[in-house]
Length: 319
Image (cartoon, rainbow, N blue to C red; front, side, top):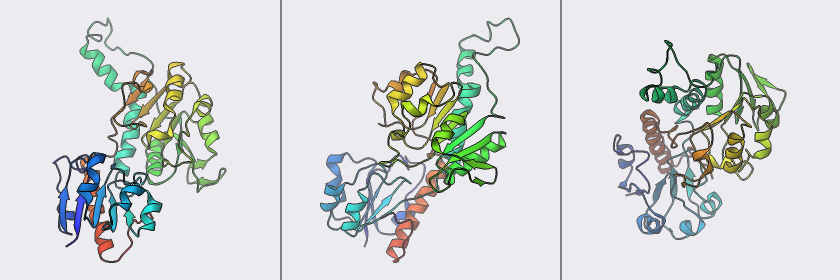
């Protein structure tokens, strides 16, 4: 019987779902979390390892001679050394697209908090500031309409397209930068530009590209300096895309108007992360992917990937 080990199950399923789709495919052992010192013992003898953020580097893979398959509980693949897996004939799969609706929704949750400041106003009402007002209404800061603003999307895959559609429903103009779409071309009402043009022209820049050696630190002081002082940056992709000290400096200097972030370079962040105290920076704890619907889809897709592998089919193979 196929031996299946899940190394870090808790974030995908903290108890509100079940692992039956995987349990039907073999002998399943579930660990909520696996510190690095426990990985080899827990994965020893396993044919299949399922992981989300637990790292499987070349040395770890080499120490697991029975391993035939790694199933990722994610779209991103950077926690596994794909070249080392290929050398050892270990198949690696991921799950694209499972969180698209939730991530796109979170983009606008962050953006609307920056423009409408709903949470801030709710807190201020409870502090008595509305009650102390001589007028029937009271607001703090500038309230901003999305209609007529330019939304710039960096990375135009499934999530980028969904964000574009929602932005258009708000009456925003959409421009995008994509590796697969040359600048100067169009897809419907979306115009493609160079990444530098997107940063210079957009009122809102939303990041939807993978973290690779080429995109690591993509958003740095130079890019931020090219943005409008009234513009917002949204990142629901990967924290490593942004040089965090540069973004904090830009926010504190008023170089851009605000940022909405669901991801950081280190998660959870240390208290020293400069963005935690940066001006007009809304941060959520990497929850864009985590709706119950998305996590249910994720489990079913991980099981479908493994079932395909066991049946001799290639499904969402990334190496």
